[in-house]
Image (cartoon, rainbow, N blue to C red; front, side, top):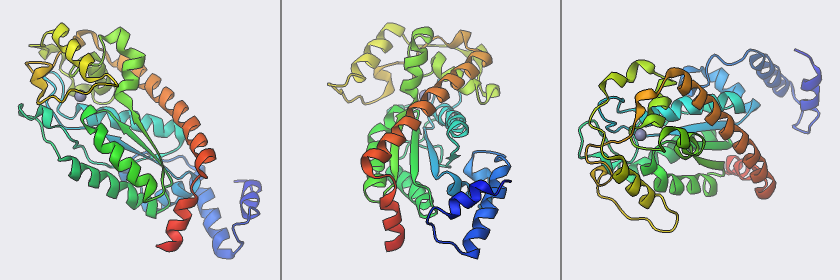
Length: 300
Ligand SMILES: [Zn+2]
């Protein structure tokens, strides 16, 4: 440890005291060793406290528990956002929050293997989880989502976390980033298709059963409905997944491999980390950074 950066910090007007000096030395020592994991629930209280002082960035993976055909686990969406969230956290020096695996997915309820929350419950889980970390010093929040059914709830929750709690917030639809980068090569983003298989292969290959691929719904029909529901201007409300895919899924994940999954993970995480680093800087410049958080802490 060199004392040079430490002196710099003390001299930055934070108010010098032995207590403060001890805190800084402790955090410098802890920061010297890299964290054993980026997952919040893997770490100890002192590790988290030091990390919040070093970089107050938290990443909330958002996903869902729902049927994904005979070849992928029901946790596909949350596994995808967890593993990408961790890779982004390594690149941006952040922590991955435990947001829970569940999301809002009434569309998949006709099939066993699906558990849904109501939008109201989900919003409260998101807001209260993130607000807890804000009380401990987290200031920047990246919500990384891999489930389209969560999008409206996350829009409302993230607005609240910015306006009421004062966090600087970005929501990234990681499944759409994947579609932009790998859609042309993987038959687009389809429920249970190659992109989703790759995401799980990059994390838990033991849960992917390519030998059990069976009864994919018609590709042309699925693509037509996915295109219709993903336009910006018109949003048809669908009752259940069978409108898109009669059997619950469609796609062609036969050629997915662990290597391709790891490459996709690396590419998606790199793209998200780069874009979000720039966006957080722009938000700081445009919105005065994290001043509102300081106000909240004084008031609370
Ligand atoms: Zn999925």
